[in-house]
Amino acid sequence: MVFPSEEWFQQVREVYNSDRDLHSGGGGACDTTAGFSVGENRYFIEFSGLDCAQVRQCSEEDLEVTDFVLEMPLETWQAMLEDVQKNGKASSNLTLNSIDLELEEGIAFSPVDDQYRQDLFYRYNQNFQDFFDASSRVETTFESQGN
Amino acid sequence: MSEATEMPREHELDTSWMDNMAEWGVSAKPGKRGLTLADIQVGSYGELPKVSDNMTGRPRGSTARPEAYRVGAYQVHTLSEIWLENAEYLYEEALQRQWSSATDIPWHTLKPLPDDVEEAECLLCTFFNEVEFVAGDVPARWIARTTPDYLEARNVLSAQVMDEARHMDVFRKRALANGGGLMRMSGATSGFVGSIDLARDFTEMSTRLHISGEGAVLTMFRMGELFGQNDAEKTMYRLCAQDEARHVAFGVMHLRCLSETAPERREEIECYLDEAEDQLMAGQQNPAGRQSESSEALAVLLGGGIEHYDEGHKKLLVIRRRQLKEYMKRVISAGFADRFENGRSPVPAQYAATA
Ligand SMILES: [Fe+2]
Ligand SMILES: [Fe+2]
Image (tube, chains in turn cyan, blue):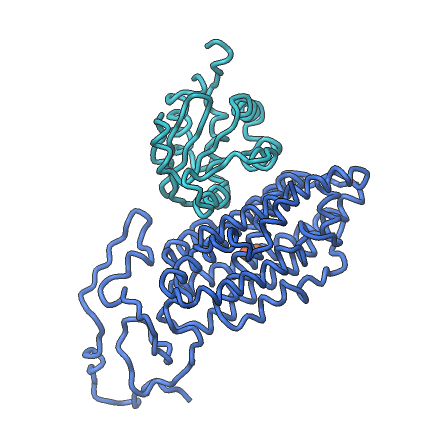
């Protein structure tokens, strides 16, 4: 599977939803929508209860209704996912939260600039981390590798 | 002696109690999250009195009993004093997102640390241990002061008390699990943190606790992923941060609700915010604020040892900057943006100074 692509996110969603062992303590039910901004591509994700209800490619405008958007340079996305592939889950310096803290302006923002909604990234952090950690079970190649 | 009606040992079967039912024929239906508090807010059971005259502990919607004792002259008995839009939801979320400090932290990843780093971590754990007591004790007092008619908001606070008990114990466990121990208490509870407990009004308390205090702590817990030395510490801080974000959400939503439903109290709330900003946000009792034992410990951890103190201190200033920015944006989200534009709040200047 090539990252970034809708198929890649779909595959991760399937893995995440199919094995409760991938949901760690503190990653219980939540309801939120978020966006991922990966290079030129935009993705929309929805968590509902214990499941990732949907993830799909979307337009810039679709992101406006989300609670928050995660945006980081393509190299950082790649470094994060390579690390997950290598270790089975993000190692400590490459968790979403760590990356957010290392960058001056962070990686999470609310499209309507509402801190209450941006705080959902902190409130549901474990679910998002578990989701990306689940990608360790999806064979991943990167666009930049010419696949 | 009990006020409950006592039946003689032998008596004619008297089923008149069957006539004393409240609204009957109610069939609340579970939603996709099971049968939640929101699902049972049906008919008269879902009606929230704007002012509650319930002094007997009568469950909302049940039939009154004339001889019931007055068990509580509840201080919080007007809806705007405590209400928030998503109380039912926050409560269910808290229940469904509990974690165990015994089994959800990978304690096996703790490894012996250099003395200065262990001491810094233990100092911080001692500090958080103290602060978490306050974060649990204070909401606990306000639960008992709130009319049972506002059970949803009370339940959110009850869940917070459970969360804070876990935070208290997880920092204690960390301090005692890696060759160190507790250090000298920080004394934070006698300053601003302690003053949270002196609040005379619920919103005064919530502004200090949920918005200023826990907002600042939330940023620090998130930073725990940077200064934690192993997976156990990083997980501990991350999971505490999730809970803290929920407590902060209570404060923001309550303040938003109050400013919309009781605009006559806005000026009073501005004064609470003035006070909080003069104290906690100015740095007193805040490890990421002015210089203190706990801020030195944070800098040692962020640097990775006392020899990298300066590097750690620089990272600490970044935490400080985040704290101030997120604080302002939360207060704006709660409906009090003006204070950052009209010069009333000292925080924009403090924020600019951290650039
Ligand atoms: Fe706490
Ligand atoms: Fe808290």
